[in-house]
Image (cartoon, rainbow, N blue to C red; front, side, top):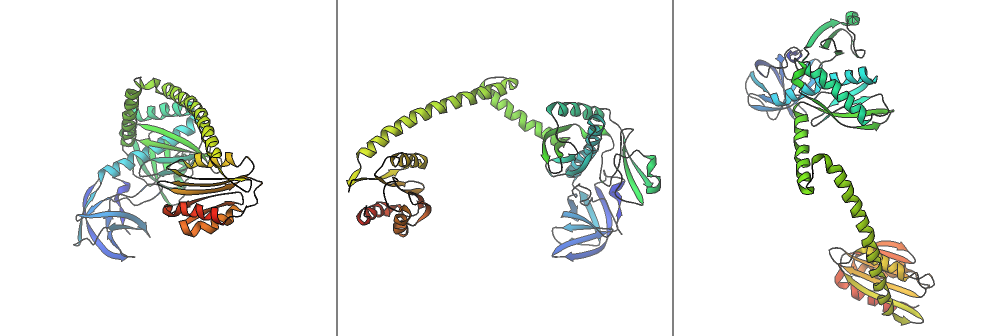
Length: 396
């Protein structure tokens, strides 16, 4: 059994300890110490990083009352000189203590309970038994929870047997029996917990709710940040706001209205642009139809475009075959090359069969119906030959 010193002193990040065993588990180098301050992944909180004898510790696992320290390579010696990554350790201390205060604040103010929590690498979440929170709820909770932080309440650790746990007003019933570890935010929150925590709420700095989403079970998931994570989030968002305010020559508070106005203006311009574009396409369609070759009272349109939008070419083809008596053979050569074969409803020709007759020649893959086929191709150099092959070998 490894003695778990992190339960009582999470601020200890340098220590020396005896190595009691070295293992190789599934190709991983594993050390077991008599005592350790390295925290293993547990209870929704991720493990510590650090070094043992200068070798990086990449994972910490609790297994059968032992703490397994997974190192990048085999660590030398029988004595472990250990250094815990303080930045990561303190970050998770801020997140975990913040989660306790946030959960209890939501319970006290809104009456919703926390069903589960997760402390991630970049952000943390809690799932509450609510169908959704409003922006007003966010504002109320953030003001309340940060008010608790600024009171700089002491965070205490109590050990109590499960038979005596009723002396503490726990936020939720403990999952384990026997000796329990209770984390108390003085006179505010009591929770059974095996994680690492700060000593005073002021060390959390600030709690910020970033967003919420509905999840299965009629629950709401809240994403939140504490401490340095919240500061980092504010810094990049403030940079973006200042940058955009400079681009739009306005204040940060006026940005939303400015952007909405720009979007609306852009929609109107796009509508106007579409009108003019369609008029130009109609002129182009008329010109293409006038150039059609006549064969047995049917008109054949053969044309190869260069770097045209496939939406435009498809639109042109569809408009032409709305009229009776047209066979359309279109190609497009560009970064991606394509072919369109289409016919009016009164022409008794299967365009799929025509496509299959030229597909190997132009290395084309695609599909469609008997009246309209579209495909991409890999050999545009043979495109004109392929369309000419259709003209020479198709009986209408």
